[in-house]
Length: 144
Image (cartoon, rainbow, N blue to C red):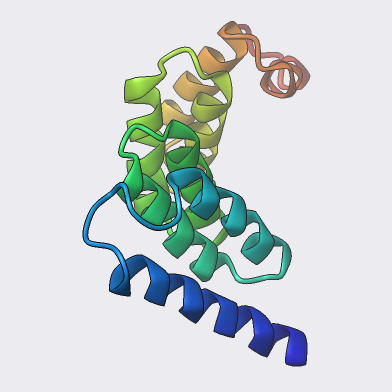
């Protein structure tokens, strides 16, 4: 219980630093600092706090594609599919060669019941070299 309270207090402290101490993007913690800290919150079982930290990273650096990707995956794990889709669309728009983004977006579409789009994204991920997706499609006897 004390570990959870400590992490929650750390989260509140980070948010205070982010919003209370800095008026410009160049002051305070860097986008990478927020991004790295988010992993600790994921590991500790606080995905909402991790999403807040990924959001801070994105606010600091709107081109930080890995932050969009990880925020999207975290939304997916929370079954927040529309938010996950929004982040993954941004990743694919900026990095159309990122196979794992297509595979992840395919999983979102699958959970949303859109099999056509899911399969389309799985095939694209396989074409771009994602081995897990290739194995999945191969097991289903689907060519890409």
